[in-house]
Length: 478
Image (tube, rainbow, N blue to C red; front, side):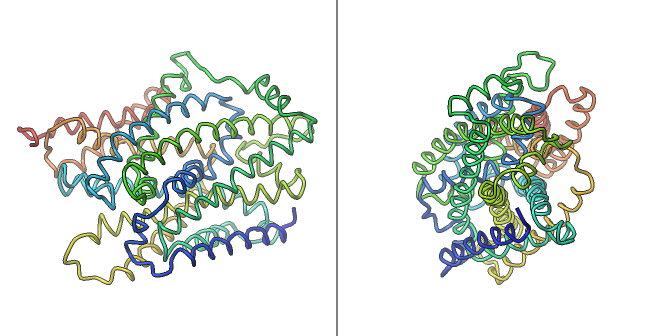
């Protein structure tokens, strides 16, 4: 694929997103930006959440991750189902009952001012890191596809990437995101299906032949029962459940979409359908990874040292033009489906949680302030992505889950303590507990030499929970 064709494909794609933004942002105000006026169809939210949950990380990194972890990722995916069930039956009814815009407002009503600000801060930290990883990935693909040939430096690629997101989200916010996410999910799934069909044709494999090729390969191992392994089933399954709870149920980004549904019944219906389809889609991505390695070996193509580069390298340099174009649409859609909503949720959380947009008596120009905050977080993402460029040498999806283990742990502990105990806490000490918890978890992970794997998230949450017990007030909360 030539850089010019790549430019036309991506340019056309963003013109479509901007057109959708124009249609959805007419007469938009702050409530439209933050809540979509609570008019989103549940099935549209469910379909769009698939793309937002998977993102460019799954699109690129999961197929490449097959080389080192085989199909063991499915153990974690099955754990996601348990986590989504908890979200639908415990957390979402709470959020709808309290009529929340920012889900961290709950912490203020339950514990107090400092707990509220601490929870919101850890979301901002978590989402900035996670979104930067995802945008770093797509910027790298765009660099390979066209900008390297034109001699454009990586920092310009990143700048263009973020500017495009800002352009179609700054006005309509979450109302625009619900619609663009659905389009982006469609392109992402189309790219996976097209690639699998193309490889099947190239290797002269029927549908049953493709299934047999995957199941008979050295990469098809799913279950790991050795307790000493970081991929042990129980560690992976329960890590997956808690990762789903914190990265969806305790995450303003993902919950903001669910809170745009008309009522709790539709929101729960969305969550149940979304979680079921997500399992099937992850199976497809893992199967795709196996087929990519089989295709490369069959054609004598060297596997790149960084396996995240395998899919883009094959699609852009070895597949036919149509498959390459669909791949480019898929990776762009996958990356932006999570990055655009992340920027919107960061803006929402900061405006509501730190600037007090929902509080009466605030005398500020809220629309102008919101746009400035939106721009400010765009700059923050730009800087953090450039920092990742200097230090990254791992699979992106592995880095995302590792970071989540440390940044979402305090949120897990706070919500667990709030929901499952009736104790009040000494509110001013909560930030210290939530700062010390990740630091202790890092130390535990170093001492155990990574034996806990992604289960460090649960350890981190448990340490926060115990820390809150130590600072509880004498009486129970009525």
